[in-house]
Image 1 (cartoon, rainbow, N blue to C red):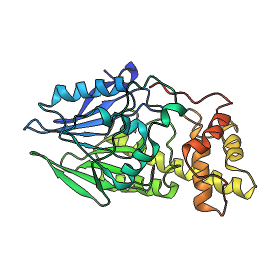
Image 2 (cartoon, helix red, strand yellow):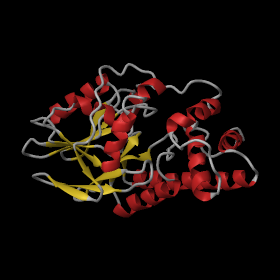
Image 3 (cartoon, rainbow, N blue to C red):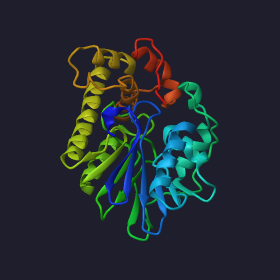
Length: 312
């Protein structure tokens, strides 16, 4: 199966290393990873958003691993990457940044109200083991490096790097199609994280959303993300100088008819990214915290007043 088929599928990225890819990659429809070894153990990267999707993912894991996952890594706390934690066996140890654990517990199941879908019987489960610096997990055949690359998409992003195979599980530090979002993290940090991923020189990259990228496609994705950040920064600088709010700036940019990302889905995220850009590069003071729930109404306004939808 391929991305164009529209159904979730398992794709081998290197021997024993797999991507669980979920079209269409929009809100709450993310990718996960599986890393196996000859002993039958497995490390998984992230879970997903609904009971049905997680059961499908774990069925794929069971097909390539002899035992339940030994370890699960949460690349960050957002619910599309962590709501499936509750479906993991109790024997699976979940590792994440200490701020990831705090974020999972603080947010609970709030996203199910913001983005209605058939989530099934969710149970919140936060990481069991937390880190605040890089570590390595040693499987029988390969090291798995957990590299802290945030703040970027969030305050606590982790990249999962296989140095021998040059495979990177990027989480939401990479979006292959669709607008990235760095409201919960840092615009400047998102660009730095993109540059650090470039320095690793991955031959294969699994983005948090979108199809697997290989070879030159990896560089194309990273180049495109840097250009996107530069565009957001330029729009923010010009709009702030003109006295526009982030929402007004987003409306002007997206309705100009010539902006370079007109074909990308999830364009409502531009207002979130401009709020972050204003906060980081000007003395603009907002009257509400910078988080997705507080800016939901502005995303809806940017979406023509229509509700933000998920295909989860």
